[in-house]
Length: 221
Image (cartoon, helix red, strand yellow):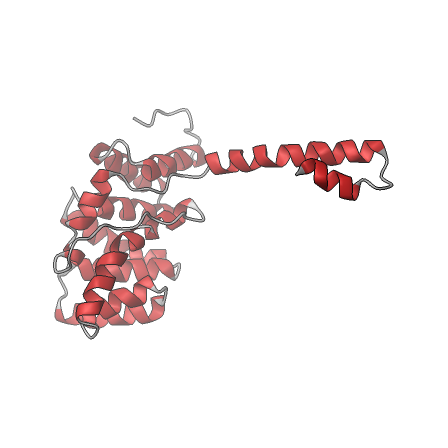
C-alpha cells in the first residue's frame, strides 16, 4: 500500500521527499499501537460483574449477559462504564413494563439525558429515600453533567452502605478524584484493589494520582 501511495505521489517528487514520505508511512502503525497500549483496560473482571449483578438497583431485573464496557475517553469516564453493564437488564425490564418509573429513570440515564434523569431519580427518592440503587442512579446522572461535587455525597453514602460493593467503592474513588480529593481518592482506590487486586481501572487511576502528588515511585500493591 505504501508503495502504491508513493507511486501516485512520487511523480516529479525529488528522491529525498519520497524517502521522508516512506519513513512517515512506516512509523504511523507503530505510533497507533503505542497509543492503544497506553489506554486503560475496558473489560470488567469477574468480581466487578458479580458486584454489579448483586447491586440493589438490579434486584428486580433479570440477570443476562452484559456487553463489554465501552472505552472511556479518559480515566474520569471510567465512572460511567458501569452503565453498559446495566444496559441489558434495563432493556429487558423496559420491554416487559415500559411504564415502570424506575426503568424510565434508568433509561434516561442510559441515553445520556442527565438533567431529566436527575429529576426522575429525585421523584423516586421522595418515595424511597433509603434506596441506594436510586441514589446511585442520581449520582451517575450528576456525574454525567460534570457535577461531581454534588454527586460525591451520594457516592459516599452508597459506598458506606456496603463496604464490599466493588462498583460502589470504585465509583466513590473516581468521584473523589474528580473533586480533587486526591489523598482520599488514593486511599479508596487502594481499598478497591484490596477487594479485587486485578481491577485494572483502579490500578490505572491510582498510578495517575500517585504521579500527580509526586509519589510515582510508591508501590501499588
